Length: 313
Length: 234
Image (cartoon, rainbow over all chains, first blue to last red; front, side):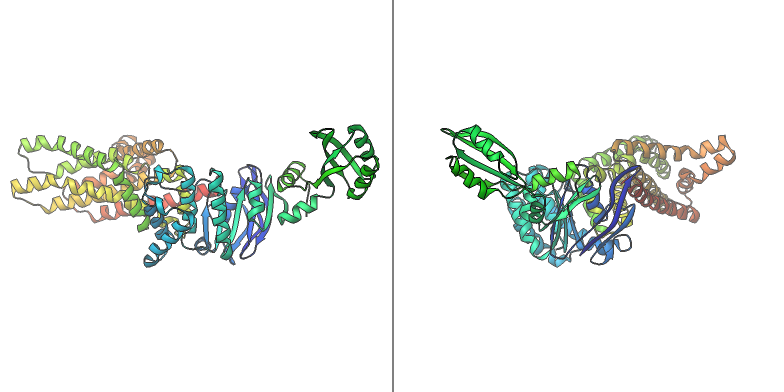
């Protein structure tokens, strides 16, 4: 549905996006991750036709954004970083303006607007001036605007920014519901959000793609070593020394007191040492009360990829 | 195009701008109209010359927000990513400002109507003069739209268009004193010399074409300017 081939964007001497390529299948939700200034918004602005690229091609549904801009724009609903709202209009006035702008037939406008407002939870606020709405509701109007015209592709630049936790959950639910029949690219800082919504993640850093895969695969790929958190009862020194004698354990340390003569330990190993750990601890009469693997979250991966610049693929 | 125009017109009349401008314009005309009424002079057409001059102050305020505001508020993204060509967007904005100008012009008709009632003489020259005024307004507004496209600061936009209009107003006088190539160029952009033909009661076909093409060219330049900005800085 969306193809991005060797896309480059320069602002004068500064290279914002450097020769990136990826594609999004029909019906897929792609998460677009990266620190501030990584080139997320620039890429999104180019896909939607707001900015022209310096080099490279963007195709939506087979149409090139440079040669057939109107065909592409017709298929895309875009929520930019700052929602493009006219504050001197009410929600209804604004959405009917957007409907006309996006060439929704006159007789379909009212019904569609009512559906959209219901979906994003704006029905009760439809007569209010956008200027008087809170940030969260303005964000909803921004999302509603992107949905006008029922576009096949949605490009959402940080859709949940500025919302309170309850609203974030609601908006995520809306996005997931929308995803069933649409192709979505979503950028975000909030990593759990991406792992909760997206089927595939592209991590972009300093204008280049640093990693690209499913959230699950990304976590297992990096997770070559096992991290364990354990609660063990017994003498601290004895436990640490015994554990260190196990082949594969790289690091173990008592991190917190968890009860009488009981400590919480964190350990790193480069292979699965859970069996041996059990028998060794049993051997020195120090029962393991609790043991759980601490798998890497997307957050760890993100920091790993972005700071070290390691290639994961 | 009409969608953009309609929204913009609504926005004019929701804010105090349109009313303030109408009030200001009527006040200015009244000040100039009063002595003529007292002196029982029936030639309203000479006031049209003054009205053209007032536009130098009115138009920059009218047009300053027209594109600059969209850029500042980020609504430009909405317009540019909608399946509407840039030219239609610019034209829609122009139509909106021109509509407010039309409203102002229609209200100003009360003065010639007063004269016609008391003198009983409606002259075709007066109608021609008004045609000139409408065309001049279009040319002025296009300059304002161009200025508004050049910056995201409304005040700067207003100042740019004010200076540009002022230069055009005095271009004729300047060209006479400067002479040479610069003088010739100045006569090309002299809107006032074309407008004066109308206020003398002559309906000049060349002048009509000149003012319409002038407006069209400036609007075309506005589109080019926005395009160029997108390509160079983004």
